[in-house]
Amino acid sequence: MPKPDIHQLEERVLALMGEFRRLKKENQGLSRQVDQLNREKEAMVKEQSSNQGTLERLSQLESLSRKNEKDRKVVRTKVQTLLDNLEKFDLA
Image (tube, rainbow, N blue to C red; front, side, top):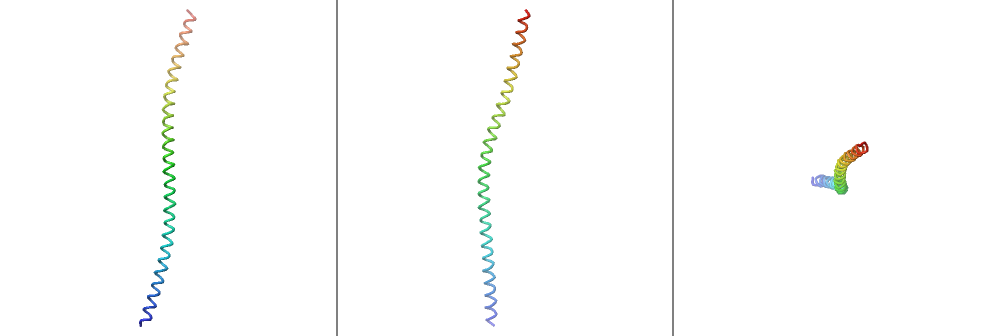
């Protein structure tokens, strides 16, 4: 009677060892995936930081563009006024 019990125990130990190896291998694969995802995350954080700087610069340029457009309108109006005054001066 003890022989079948020992045989069953050996089979169960072998099955457990096989399952342990499988889980260890799966864990290693998952660890590699986690490492890869962490590297990708770091790259994305750097890219996001770079993009943030670019967006800030773009916002500054847009603001300057709006200011320049307002200035151009003021200058155009002044030039037009001066031209109108010159035409009136020539007629007088």
